[in-house]
Amino acid sequence: MGIHTYFRSLNDLERIIRTPGKFKFEEHCVSAHSWKVVQYAKTLADIEEQQGISIDWKKLYEITSSHDYGEIFIGDIKTPVKHYSLELRSMLQQVEEGMVSHFINENIPEEFQDIFRRQLREGKDNSVEGLILEVADKMDQVYEAFAELQRGNTEKEFIVMYRYALIKIKNIDLHCVRYFLNHILPDIIEEGNRSPFDIRKITEEALQQ
Image (cartoon, rainbow, N blue to C red; front, side):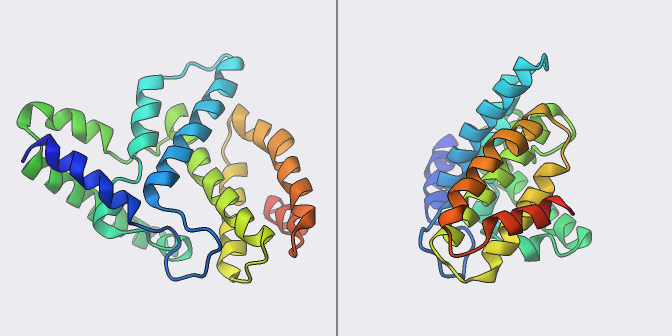
């Protein structure tokens, strides 16, 4: 069926709900998450450029817009489970990458296969673009969890998600991370003052780890 099959498969990302099995005031699908990650990433990249860092924008847009395509095959696995151990995370990544590779081999015309392999690969690496993707991905976890906590969702997983995402972000050495911590996170904390949870305390405890 060719590239048509790929285009049709994108609808599936609208039906995969993030943080499955937990009560949420707001449902978020994978396609909406991917769109937000692109928005975060381009602003983070702008901050890096202002500090003299060279950005490969083509690579950035490719890896941020497609970073969760593989979830079409395995769904969204809860963060605490996915990161329970490095071995489990590696196994899940191998399964996801293998299924994406199989999909490309079976459905994408040969002249486009190398392009799709590049675009749909795991984009999180030690390049500045890969690190920006990591930060942007975790920022969306922060905002999704924050929205639930602010509305009084008592599911403990959202506290875990918020804390875990902040810990991951703060340990990435980028100018945009320092900007996030110094200029954006304080606004989140300030807005969180109206939350039933002590967002400031949860945030401070995460940043101390």
